[in-house]
Image (cartoon, rainbow, N blue to C red; front, side, top):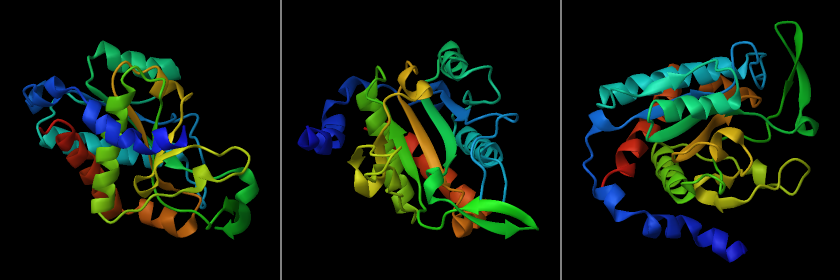
Length: 242
């Protein structure tokens, strides 16, 4: 089984339907749903300096939409503050999205966290792990295409000088997630609702680890955000390129 998983990225490239690649790549006809992880009320993880994950997600997702529209994907859109997880993929389906990209920022298991004071408040941090992760689900009806998209995003992020974190594959409680391709940081997460219920290829991008104090600072820089956004947008282009 492990050997099978190691060769899956290669199989994804070989099995990807040729007609999908050769179908007219008119960017104006392609629609990308950008899912902004969590909500303004339920912010998700907290950074080492106490900032909510949602704020990081919103900044990157908004920049990604701008970049995609500039590249000609004029009907793409963001999903912000929906009523439920399933509502996210339902909205993408209703608007006939071709791809579903969920933007998140990462944390670590609670037992890895230490405490420090920032602005006279006690905060939690972990400087052990940093980097991006790409999550896909084998339960997605278009899993092989999801894996193909994740591969393109991983290649793009590496091309822009970014590296993945491998801590979700550690043999520790709460992790042990299979890595399809360690050098690209692509993980198997079968039960994430937005990945398994999306009727189109879907990838969840953990842009970086916000409980890492140095990485949090970098992730808040607009230059770093633009590098990530450019890498993802290039991957979307490459996804449809014959």
